[in-house]
Length: 295
Length: 289
Image 1 (cartoon, rainbow over the protein chains, first blue to last red):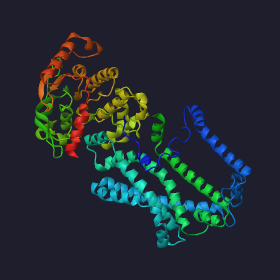
Image 2: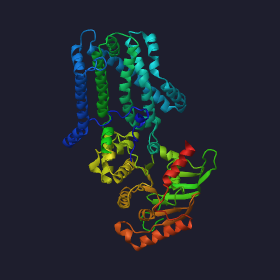
Image 3: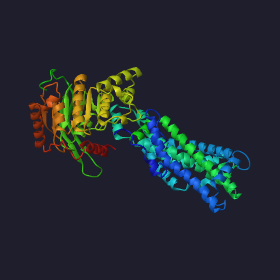
Image 4: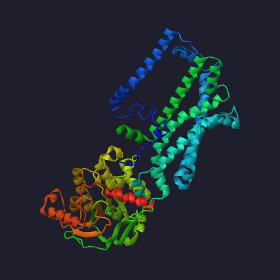
């Protein structure tokens, strides 16, 4: 058909899909029909979620499990309200601090990944050297470096956590963007050759637009990874009002309702982060979403 | 050259002299794709290359367009080397796949070559509108390629190829992927555009009816190594229309071309199992990259 083959690396990296692509209706004409369709699409998931939460609450009320095993949803909500922004376990400030580390790490990792992708897309030799190294590095359980990073950049320095996130983010961004820059339809290159277009023109008018959907696929994976990196980095020590420390500290104080509230906060942050990228994607490359909806 | 073209032939737009093409595929035996090709195309002519799958007709078109270079022999276009002609943007190209960019609207796809040529915005807009109206897609300027049918996409590709007024249009099985009815409609469309723009067209096809209906001359090629076996002058009266397809002369010419193909050792190949364009392309990549 036409130029873009579409990004596929998400699946290869094992994360991809997730909340993928179909986020509610596309605005514009036929929006009413689309609203109906998307309500029908999401309704079963919402119902199952509510039933699960209610069931959890009821089963625990009836069977009287010990709350340190798994607190009831109502207990978690209560903990959430009690520790919203103050006390020993301030949830909101902690989540904000962790989010800041994650976003700093995401920026560093994405920046580095994109730069390396351009270098390796431009020079075959660079690709030959960098790609195997990157694949090898990616096979290492990078989380294991967290204590080292804390040591190098200081336990209390948010940068040590951000760098953990950056290291995790780097590989999928680099690999996806390289692929997007390189995997251009051969016919497109012949066409550009027939116009006697320079490499620079081909980069601007074909390779970069072609790589954008791949970039956003990588970014959706990267948001989750950056939060994981930041929180795991915090597990190994750091300032107290961050999500990772809050989870470790509340758990060792046997305040599991607070631990769960913190996990809930982390999940909400992750989803918000992801949706933020989806919104930016919609604004930046509306044609890609429209294409998915049409096919 | 042709009986019905009123204008006398001027200096050739394309002169192909003694062109051979050999593909070396790694350590394996070399494949001779083209052998001793001599051909001249006059200004304003519509020349079709026809032959069995893998006879190198797409390779020959790519050599003319300087997408690949010949092993021996020369190609002269407008008195220049093929490379010079490409750098001077003498070629408009239409491939079997429309190769449109989904991130651009139909209008912006047509503007692409004009942007590369550095034309100003007002000229680009006017030119794109004019070309899209020529292919009767004026109402689809703001659409994106994936919203169009295959035939419409190919018309956009034609509009784009004509946008910068190239002196020669190279078309490599542009309608090979379309159904028979759309294909016939597109044939009439191309004829109309050719008559309106007076462009010289070199057209690769493996459909005998298509070649006869469109061309002023049909160049028949043999199986690999591709050689020119016969050149059939198509004296079907112009302007041609759907009635031309039912005239006696049309059927006679179809038979002439079919017999020429058979004599050359090729089977008449309206239903090829292997897509010759893709074969040629794979080989080209093997040789270049």
